Image (cartoon, rainbow, N blue to C red):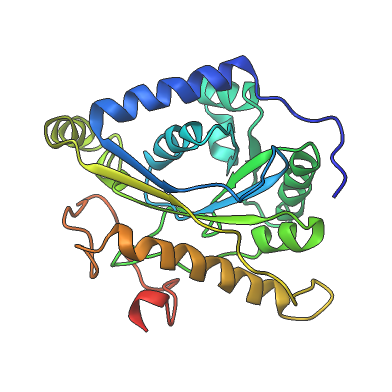
Length: 258
């Protein structure tokens, strides 16, 4: 893929990445493992991560900074409509995802522009905070796979565990209690960056290959998550009472259950 007019992260975003590291260090013990592809020299990448909760974008930002990258984030349009947070997201160059019917193509187009500009793009293939009863990755949507297959951009699976203990799903409910608990216990927040997902042999011109690519991506994320939560294979030790659970989008045969 030819990179045009290389994007540079604004100072505000670079400062925010540093601040994310400070904030995470107060409430958790960050452990980062794995790394970016060997020989990577600043070209476009897709970082595909599982979505645990409201705090994990901050944890992922701190982890990415340790690896020397400033990823742009694909986030729901509701975040961009918020009075202050929306201004921040726009100023930092993040990518808006509108979930209205028929708007998905616009989000993919915006992401493609970002990647053609040489950006590292952090995406959540699940498309929402996971509600699986065991907090394992849910079925992914095909947008990430379509971007990768169209542009030839490597997909780095990112698995994380522990960030769900920093903020409750139902915020602002129980925020103070949860933060005080995290401040006292300082849970371990683990983030793993894996080798690029092998999408060879797949093409958008073949019916079903976008779904197959998505499964490969989610398999890689799930496989990376297994060792991060070795002591909690069935479900998290700390249960968020504000988080609803449903198995409607649970994966049928995830790696950890085979």
